[in-house]
Length: 105
Image (cartoon, rainbow, N blue to C red; front, side):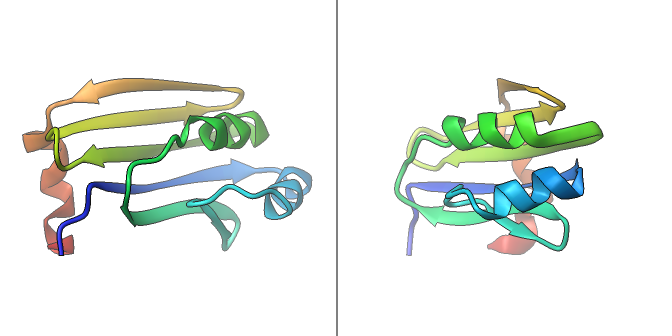
């Protein structure tokens, strides 16, 4: 089955209070698990930036993470880098970025 988009990533470094707040927030397709936020989604295109904003805002002083948004139809990867209170999205070469996901075929 071919998926239109795949979204993978993990973010860590939350204070216990912020982690508790995130657990009460709808961050779909992101999940709060084992003290961090993870995403592994394959399906239709979606706007993840509102959730990325909430997650970045909740990061503690040394928190960080990434999310890769892979558009299979357009063959492009957008990499979201998260740091406390900030996030940045850049387009990356899919041929290099996807080498790390070879085990997911």
